[in-house]
Length: 69
Figure 1 (tube, rainbow, N blue to C red):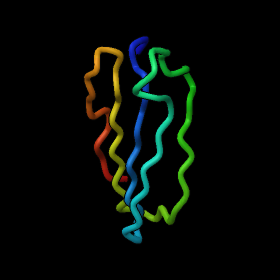
Figure 2 (cartoon, rainbow, N blue to C red):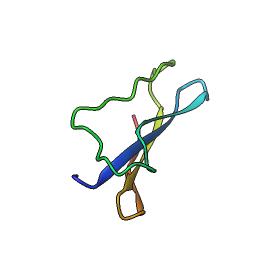
Figure 3 (tube, rainbow, N blue to C red):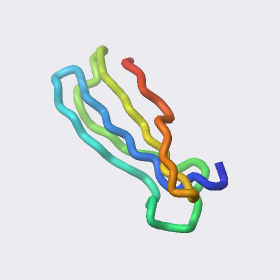
């Protein structure tokens, strides 16, 4: 995790509203701090979709989480 620069979360809530928030900066050379959070607001009553992408120091990106909750 020492090469993780940014986490980007895209959430679609149960009403169909989609929002994207991130923490960190994929253009930086400073790793993301442990314990960083991404605040989200919405109507989360089930059947919400969460997609989290991680951006790394080597320029790669990976899907970290793709789930419905």
